[in-house]
Length: 413
Image 1: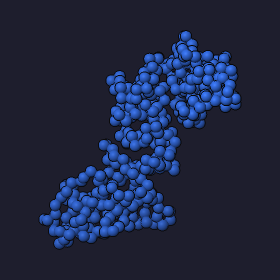
Image 2: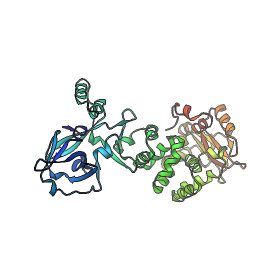
Image 3: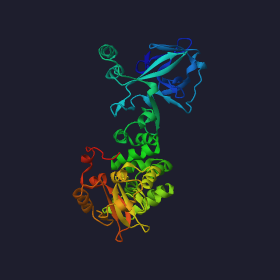
Image 4: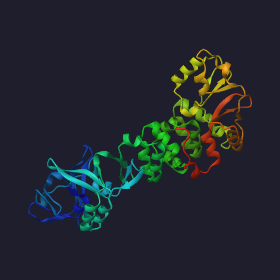
């Protein structure tokens, strides 16, 4: 086993044992589970020269011996799928799914395997830092007393970043198992390009939930920096009200381009919301809700819900509208489940409806939700036509600052 930090700076000698320079980096291919060395970089004066790994005859911590004389060595260039261990990976960060935090790559563990050199682990310990400072003996003593903090390489995966070379993270599948709020906390700590790389690696639905949980300042930057098609797909998966809020913060030209690239149905809903003033009920409502005709039976309504598979936050209340879209009743999910299958919705719906107008102030919305202890309140226009709903979490957004909202448990999710 080798540690990269103990190899860097070692002497490289040619076949005649004459000095060629010092080892400054090792290049590996990412095609295999444990990346194999393909090239090595030698520093000679101010020059850095790259050679193929098959020129190495002997490789130890003390020195590297090559197969050919120095005057027969030919340099090469890196190819796609290769990375520099010191330049691209060392000192970068890994997402820790256990502790939901970022941890630093302090060193890399290498091993000989089938005649080649492979990356097998990531050292995140404080001992690795001492090793790199030249305090190897102290690091070795510390490692005997404390279990080394090593991460198996196969559990991490590199994500490209134009500004920082490489950022390591737990494989996409494992990252997606985190709650979007945890992924958002991780993304908030990353540099902008790495934040984009992490979000773009997620499935669209998970990415959308993650962006909804991110700090508002980072949301705008993220959408500006993301690939347009990916950003549009993400917006299409977001709740319409959240997508509208985010687009309203973007430059007009950028927002228009993203709207044009969104799925047609979702874009249409978002455009409707953008027509409202942001400090009104219409400006914070969502158009995702379940509307039932009054002539439907309870059994037919339940079958409809199964087909629609609506989000959890949209089915605490079901709204009854006539053929012209007028709000005529409301019922809870509990009311529907307890009703006999043949009962008409009109027979057990609540006709006394608490609602707010689409031009109502945010203070009025908050008062109504708090006074009647509602999980959601319907939004209507001047003609009593149903326009959307405002959920209690959106009502909380009105009244609490961001720092307090982050401390509250999520009601929906």
